Length: 219
Image (cartoon, rainbow, N blue to C red; front, side):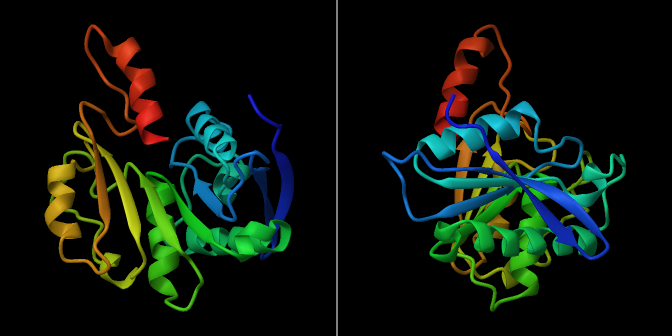
């Protein structure tokens, strides 16, 4: 299962949170770091986050996960976006301080809300050195509210973006994302997960067999 992650305390204003560093496998190491933020309802220790972090580190990337402050403080309601962005920026600073590859090539992103926060980090500061953004199930709108789009800031990101989106995602399907992404520069990459929901889970009689293949495809 690879090496155990190294815990680092990240100071944020009057508080602090914990980041976990999954060091790249030495055999396949690449000079790059990817920071992945968790979704609204789960911490960085959720199996989805841990699995992705371990697999990607085994493939040669230094991976960083972290808890947003509300999660670290065991509050259920997520912080507002400005607070999420402040936390994310602090983690970026810590990654560059602790990981040499983060000073060479740095990618950010995350699951659902965590990925959305990453796009705001990039959109808010065009001078911030970010090589790209990885979005695992972008929450384009609340479920059942396709009129409440969360896309106004995306034109300001101006970095390469990879959207991995399930065809059954109630927060926004690939077909909903496609026309929005088509207007962005640089043109984002949209990877379609056939039959996947917001967490890329598939349904049906062969779901258990297909699920492993789906996760392998994403990773």
